[in-house]
Image (cartoon, rainbow, N blue to C red):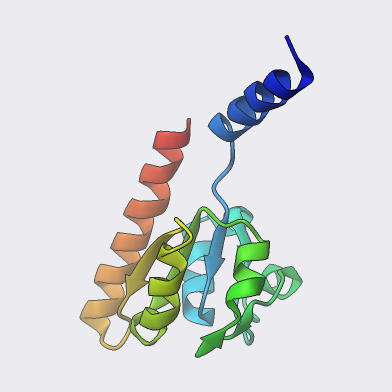
Length: 130
């Protein structure tokens, strides 16, 4: 077996066991992910993500209204979660085959539905990767 073939097989096996890598594009989404006990899956977040304190240790991908696509791509996310005002950025990320999720956090009903949607997405992804 050549080294090239071995490398491809190794990369394939590593990808099968790859952990979810989430980027949050707003502080509220960051807080929701930590509340859902998925903070360990976060690899990047927007500026002003100050809560919980662990969020301050994450790499910043830019302002939540204007994230830097290059910084997001450098983190190799498997999922990027943003709000309705991030629609343009989320659409651009789809061109790079990155899974995105857009939520609406404007009303209490929207927030409740968005929390459920985020929980469903991160839990279903975990099940699919296991």
